[in-house]
Image (cartoon, rainbow, N blue to C red):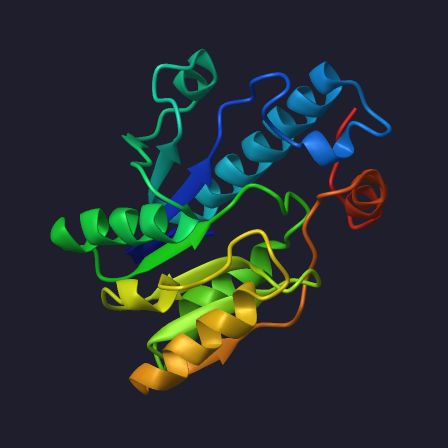
Length: 203
């Protein structure tokens, strides 16, 4: 399959540091297992994006961590601030480098089918912004065809209000938005099994 061009995919990724990632999984997994699970999830997301898209960048919280050296992809520091500020910064970098459009991804949906990413890229032809809603009230991807940093302003990250507050910002600006079908993130132990049932393979 030919890779999609004209869009920069930016993967917001934390280093798999024990005790600092996927802490909500530790009711069933040890901190080390949770970190290994995070690494496996991130690897799946990164390799999928690199297979589908010609321009993929990893935005890391710690660019010196050896985990990121395992991917032959450009690496950028996420920057400071809350998630919205960091995503806005990454989008600003991409558009400054003349990216045609931008697709921002997290690493919590390793089970995401290829079609969801391709649908997001395709929807940008007719919309300013594309969001991939998830069941907890957030989204697993956001794509834009021009810099729209203000859509992240005033959003209560890690809450159930993320999608709704982002949509209010979009409506205020009058931008055309497309919503994909609702998916889910892997946040709790039961989500790991659910992701496996969707086809994600993790030992």
